[in-house]
Image: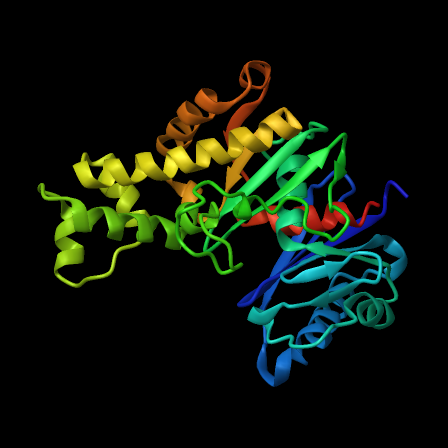
Length: 319
């Protein structure tokens, strides 16, 4: 078993990434294909099967050489049935029998989970989580996702919604979220949330600011533009980052007060702001965390980047 390999598949709306790894998480081969979402996503699973089989032939390997395939997918994943529903960015409008189809097409066992959970597993296994048994991962991208590992186990909850950190309420009177509630963390700490906060604060700001000037001129901004401006001393951008960090620190303190993980790891596109963001989030985290949590839980930046998904998927195949 120990000399068998693992296959990790990170299914995204634009690209599907693959990796062949050892059981210790060392990546030996990696490749990617475009995700074809045409025809209600009917090509996605066949393309994955074909790509795996083609690469096994290319590397002169057999299904018996592998312990299995792990896969992360958008949408709601039934990990027992191996089905995916609600993956709208894949054009999957009905339930997809991903596990059964891929197992039939590759002759290898498949384990599948939600992509945010899988990224958490990867970051915990080979990234900033240092394989600690208790790690919380939050990813700041277009939305805010997360995953919780407790005592070495990825938590799913009774309905599969454990780790929905993006929907922790940080402002009951805040912005309307896509989930229907108001004031979810996602509305203020995602890439789009940062821009939303900047737009609102710019309307009330009367001083000099490159961010305000850009918005007043009718031009677009991004979360990266906001963070870069803050690093360069723009007074409005500094206030925006402070507000976003406040909401993030508050939410993560509440999560940590519940779970007391060794590490809370921040990943995703917004985390590219790096230590500038981490240190400010940590300030508010320490303000709102329970004393013992404050002294034992550490806020860290993710280290794997786009590799977290395929590594976490490969780790799933070990189960």
